Length: 291
Length: 249
Image (cartoon, rainbow over the protein chains, first blue to last red):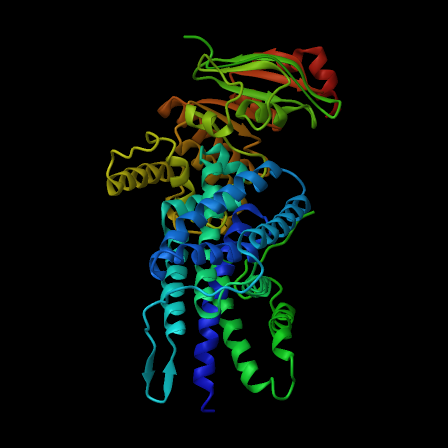
């Protein structure tokens, strides 16, 4: 069992990024009912933005510089792709995000080329030894950024005026309109925050393993994570991120020798099992759709 | 003083089906104005045109003398045009107080950034509490709105709309599904709100007895056309109304 803790910590470090990404994904889903299939590309764009800034800025400054740009990117996507389809069939909007994903994939390759790139510079080393266990700098950074940010957003959503407005729009958009709530601006902001979170996740991934198109596959993990947490639960997304991250790492260590390749399928197996017992995900709201 | 709301020759059709045809009327300040009609008469469509959900194909709506064409629902709400919905449109996941506070934001000057946050929050809270007290909802202030019995949820929606201190409140079947006693309570609240806060009321309602008892004037719609427009006493006597509406009962 000597490997247990190191693997668990590594898994939670990964899970922190799943959580951030899923949080933004779920936030958009709740507020606008749009399933954003381009979330992986949001992460990709964020990682490349960070890479570009890091060419001439120290890495921490590069990440900070990428963040407002990412927010703007999210707002532009909402204005350009989502807003014009408002009121259309949900499938139309989903197809639009799939198209957007393909377009962004192409654009990223055109601009930055197909080969794997490494960030210049690094974050200050925060790794430490705790008794027998070594906690890597990557794990410290991921947890240090994702946890307060995720919990802070949850708190804002629950308590702040802005958060209450977002919830009001998510729940009853017509009523929100009738109360004079500036829905258009707030929804654009939600997309901005979603892109911002994806960018932070992308930047932290890039720090650890470089920037390349394969980051999109990391982005795809957002689906099992969000479904496991309950598609409409922002808190569930964060929780499920950590959970799947940890399970993946432990499976890598303990199941992979027995069942090679199983770890790839693990998130989906977990989702299936959980949905059998809790059809709305871990923290999703029970609801009956009336047709 | 002129009419608070004036509809002039409103026309609207959905895929060729006429929902409103040449609907004109005026609502006077302080009035309790009712819109009735059989199912599918265009009552809710009319409310949606007034509140800005739909734009009429032809005709204009004037509110406080201002033409509303091109104004979004939010802009109309900020001008003092409140509304409640048929069926429930409360924020079920929020507490009763949070619901009413959201409504109350309209009553405070928009974005009073000059006001310190805490002071603004205090004012909002105080006003929301007053409205809750007024509608006898104070004991439920921290309950999740969606957990309340239906009649109280309806009352929360009315409270949320009243908290915005609208000059004119559009109510879409506020009494549907309520027990007799709840209807009487609601009627009293509405009449008091008109008295106390000077709110003009326009309501769409199915309960004909309540309408004839409470309203100052009545507009009867059928198939999107005005059948009758005048004092409630005349409704039962009008042969066209009797044929289209009362005759069925």
